[in-house]
Image (cartoon, rainbow, N blue to C red; front, side, top):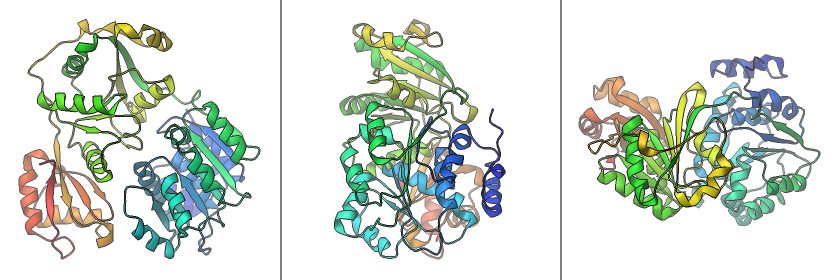
Length: 458
């Protein structure tokens, strides 16, 4: 176990005090390995698993050298999805509390372009964005990157998988050559090494996968006839009785079919795939994070950036295209020392694929050990209230919590996660009192104002 403390680094007392308040008592493996080089302004290629603390690693580095009085954009973080951009920006804002007035701006697709242009007129210290939207702002003339000192590529392997390589290269042509470039990735594909050789100088390679403690995941591989794969899902669920599950499939069509099948079997399930419009993607991700949906059926790309701290189970309806994808999928369970289960289905025609996954720790069997309960059902414990007001209306979580507990008289134990976006807010409410909470909040006010309020999914 790593025991190195942040106080051993050349950080200000105010930053260390804030890190302690946030619960950063000791450095994770990636932080201990990477931060000394980052603070020395070295270029870095860092390989670490999802959930390893890499956002804090590069975040501490770029915030430490940020000049609050310099109104130019000093750091750019590129990542594959809007959801991950939101997650990174949220974490950076927490770490940045040690120094006031640090402006962090998100530039990602799926949301209106013009409000982003308006925000850029007031500049920012740090930009977190997706390659396509950042490039669009550069082309439009609304984004100037000539003062960038630090460039970060997070989940770099996924950006390459999603075909962002050309956009990334084009964005980088607008950034000074004299800069620090940090490349974070869960895997090291050949294309990644080529990219590093092009955009970095004397990059130091840091790999922590081998020294980080292994996730406590029990991995099952079930041989299943193709026509029985849908029923095999019910067998797995009714035998192990998870609270929440992600089911991965390789195609959008299958994702839709699986979700429809589960809903007919009285299992709360939602599908997320590339055909969904951005607002519908957000609705699905919010409901799953809020425990308003127990099963999310997803393609790999659609589920990127999802931040779920407690996930009981992952089911691979199809064998992933490669083991890197497999590791990334199942790594979503067993976070923060928890235990998890991963189930992968394969047919009799896929023996050549499954041989690549065989090792001593994985369990290879059939579904005969599973029980089929035709009466099994799975309902999410919560519903999600949608409030048509958000950050632009200066709404904060405390405002919503106060309106529910003080004015509506709802006990805090019935209120779950609160997520606030620019124009909307989402609140998890226990399903047993959802109608009462909806009615009370609809009649009442938040910050002295009435907002349209409705129940997501009903």
